[in-house]
Image 1 (tube, helix red, strand yellow):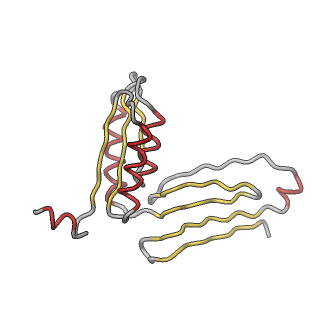
Image 2 (tube, one colour; image 1 turned 180 degrees about the horizontal axis):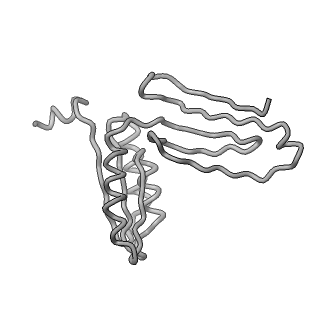
Length: 157
């Protein structure tokens, strides 16, 4: 395998980052991941924060910028790392819905990338009148299976 083969798009690039600490140039790292992964869907970054001293904000933001997912493993849960790595490997091989959002009544939740069988939870406090007229809408700007946008609306009617 040569560098030109890797750049040809024949292979998907998946980067796994493990960190147990802090960095001085967090914004530079996040911006670099965003810039490199925005070019195409072939590159994704999956991050793991290990230990209670890791920078959780860095771990989350790099994964979001890298269109991947993140996991935090606390000091008291080292056995969780194996399950979280296996889950990330599964996500790395699956295509993801991109730029997803969910409207729950008047509130909009930006969900980013969503993977197959990924559970999401959105909550809202609303008046009885808003609940009675409730309508929900899920949108994805790009479905890699159909290569088009996706939208689904639900209402109480």
